[in-house]
Amino acid sequence: MLPDWAPNVHPLVVPFPVALLVVAALVDAVALAVRQRAPWVRASAVGLYALGALGTAAAFLTGRDASESVDLPAAALPTLNAHADGALWLVWFAGLYAAARVAALWLDGRGREPGRLAVHAPLAAVGLVGLFLVYETAEHGGELVYHHGVAVAATAPALEAPPDTALAARLDVLAGAPAEGPVFTVASGRPTLAVLPDTLGDLEARAALDLSGFTGTAALVYAVQSPADYDFLALDTAASGPATLRQGRASDGVETTMDQRTAALDGPAELRASAVGTHFRGYLGGEQLTHPHGPAPPPGRVGLRLDGAGTVRVLALSSTPVE
Image (spheres, rainbow, N blue to C red):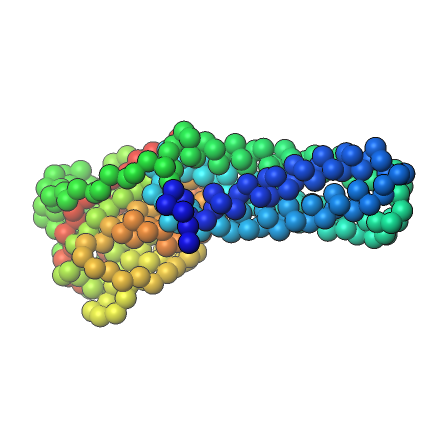
């Protein structure tokens, strides 16, 4: 049972690996000083490093889950990516370093003898790299909370917005029929692709679509280079059953799905996609469902790609640069 102040389990887990790795480095320094009189201190340091490595894995996994459960402002995405990347580096380093220390302890004195200073001292020095990674990862985590207010400030409820009647005038139709006001009529076998005028690099894009009269695939597209080259967050709908949210990339007209999840669709589809560096995220109804990684796309335009049959009413479509 989580306390009321905790939005998820991640903030409860994070202090443990930080404390364990810092204390491990301190005990390791003491072990160097007392290696002749108390060789067991080195074994204690190695045990703390091993526990710290397990703690970093737990913190990484709970942090990944936490990022999917909180509402993230677009400005926080670069910081979140740096935090996640730093945490992954820390997990790998801590795990490999702990394994190396356990092996060295067993081979060099088996924890009951002082061991060789030429082995212990360099290994202890390498452990300081872990403290640097801890600092970098924690700094970005603190920035998320104290600068961007992630999981701290209450999110204002979304307001019902009327359809964007001026949308048709702002869109360039690259394929298919143009919109009539906020409504696209899509014919089977004739996909529609319409994009906003701005070209963006790192971005967050949002769309709200009424798909009650449509069957097929409605995609929020970004990094659009041409009708055959774009990144997408696509919602596959059928006459009955759950919808499938897919995120990926199309090149030369061939779509590659990087990540996908099924979800129930009740009411208008609220799509949100972000592309910041090599991290991509896809949301449906405010819930993050996809998080693939891949090469950063070139700057491009944002829009909609509709492939199916029926009418799609566009309630909102927007794009925001992320710096």
